[in-house]
Amino acid sequence: MTLQELGESLHGCQRCKLSRLGRSQVVFGTGNPKADVMFVGEAPGFHEDRQGEPFVGAAGKLLNDLLQSAGLSRNEVYIANVIKCRPPDNRDPEPDEVETCKPFLLQQIDLIKPKLVCTLGNWATQTILEKKVGITKVRGQAFRLKDFVVFPLLHPAAALHQGSLREPLHEDFRKLKAYLEQAKNPAPANQAAQPAASAERQPAQMDLFGS
Image 1 (cartoon, rainbow, N blue to C red):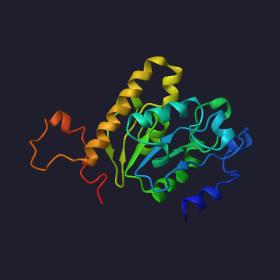
Image 2: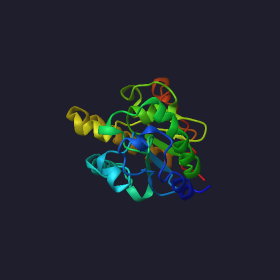
Image 3: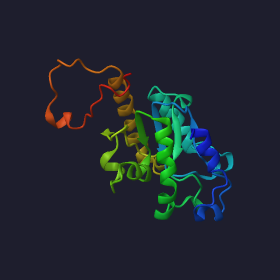
């Protein structure tokens, strides 16, 4: 199955109650289908539900600026959400909704084969890491899974709703930029080892963007 075929198979999806609770359409995902870097958010909001594309409202505009600050462009990454339909009044996804949609997110990742998956906020981070972790504990750090590296970030919408999170969000993307630069230009193998405390936070980056 191709990414396009997967998206078409979810058109008009009726698998969970969100299909009956006012969503306009399924918001599958957008971007480069062969992206090295993928961003995963929580769920579509009002504007996303209307336009059928993730991150097109105020949070999307902020995300575009953050991508640029990290040396990325929207057309070179892929953007999706854990939940493909807008929950009523933008409420948090419910466990059964996550369990229904999670397989399709994992299929997206399997088809795109990104080397780095940036999770935005608690829901995406917990879904991908499969651990009940708080975003404030893991943000700005890299975690190597079997097939890709996970890099949790604060959600842009959180910074819009809580101004005190704006600077931490920008800090997250500065760390992402540094990580990407280090991944593309790994330190020589004979370079002196880092202190253990900082080395523990560094995943095996050498092959992240290698052939």
